[in-house]
Amino acid sequence: MVRAIYSDGSSEDVTRWTRFGSSEELVAGVNEDGMATVTGHGEAAVIANFGTKVATLTITSPFDNAIEAATFSKAQRNNFIDDLILKKLELLHLPPSGSCTDEEFVRRAYLDTCGILPPVDEAMAFLADTDPKKRAQLIEQLLERPEFVDYWSYRWSDLFLVSSRKLPQPGMWAFYRKIRQSVADNQPWDAFARDVLTASGSTLANGGGNYFVLHKDVSELAEATSVTFLGMSVGCAKCHNHPLEKWTQDEYWSFANLFSRVGLKNGDRSGEVLVQSRLDGEALHLRKGIAMQPMPLDGKPLPLDSTVDRRGYFVEWLTAPDNPYFARAIVNRLWKNFLGRGLVEAEDDLRVSNPASNSELLEALAVDFIKYRYDLKHLMRLILNSAAYQRSSKPLAANAADDRFYSRYLVRRLPGEVILDAYSDVTGVPTLFNQLKSAAGDAATPIPTYPTGTRAMQLPDSLVLSNFLEAFGRAERVQTCACERTADASVSQALHLNNGQTLNDKLRDKNSLVGKAIAVGQNDAAIIDRVFLVALTRKPTVEERKKFLDILAEAAKDGPQSRREAVEDFVWAILTGREFLFNH
Image 1 (cartoon, one colour):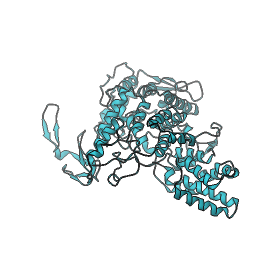
Image 2: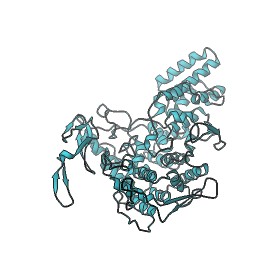
Image 3: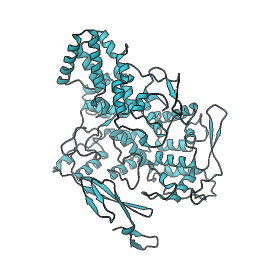
């Protein structure tokens, strides 16, 4: 039964006028009368919509596993993340997998934190180290590497749509440099948000001001800001009350009116725009044709005649410790990066009707993030040191069906940029980035901007031409949505790996590591061991070594060229295999 309580204190059974739904039909379904039926194992939220109000009820259906209590009491716990995950796993009767090996951890940590394969000498030193605290020490080292700045500058450039598609080249570079400096300085997330959202003056001197050049329309600016900093979309409320959430059309236009007084005009320099806060200007309600009082979502309204800077008013609300959305949004994004799946999935779809897989953990992480003054590295450090992050990806019979409660590390495909850079590292042949697509995508022009050796993760502009990155899901940076980047497999990817020039040309290059290894007379066993160490951060098994030794020895019978081609095929097999393309 659904009961509505009105402002005058009266209540009424409104079940017959309520719309019901389920977040996980395979766990629990619900009919139009609100009768829920358990259909599987896990958790599902039954969602009730009445008018503009939304309420949820979580149904927990434990898995059919007989697990001893000691399984959870004796499980490794490195911080409060593990306490809350194990609490959920115990409730669901899901045993945790054991810890990953050191070989798995070092590769995983380098890729997830810096977007690079661990250099062989560093990996070998880590594996030889007997200090029980070596994983925590490695995490600290990774957080200070220059590649860390490359990786997270790229990630935030995706989020903020840094591209010359809508920005002039000088503005694009200024915005990228602002983001990069923020990452290098470990600027607190609230301070970074404040810098961007209150930016004024020249967009070349103050790169964050390009955010307003990208989003000139008031509605677009409001919606982009909601997704970027609050992790939620309010776009459906622009024309009518949100059909699935609590946001009304009035609330949408009150929110949009916070951004109606941003003024833009061209500066004196090429690509320069001047950003300023105006004293007038309103965003008119689409249906009513009037200006609504400027008001943050679930915040207090600002009088229409107030002279308070509306952007500043919004930022004060946004970064306030009691804001229910700001910290959760960035926590969920970082969690997705390291654990492969957001506590709320999709990562930018935080809403009442899409509850977290572990709401208590999301809340605890947000509270801790605020406590430590929005320190992104502190949050990363916390996640990386958890036993949950360091868990093996190998499933147990009893947790093989789990894809969201973190009983094991979730295997996922690496980003295309990471794969491409790794191909360059393993083959010793850098990728050339020397053409820029037009904003319309119908032409490409040579560019001298990126010198040989520039990595994909160092590119500021999504219009730099790369057929490989396009095939492997690079974000176009057109819309503020995590859906722009895809990790789905496709036929074009398979064709690119098999017949495309990117990897094949690197292997055949006369200066490749394959060519150099053969030129200096390395034997087959040394080549095989080296490739495994560079690409997979492990030595081949006895069976793997014998298999490839036999193949290379057989090819050598037909001469040096045949042997070289066999070595190239061996490296190609490693670089296109599951263990390389996926992070374990």
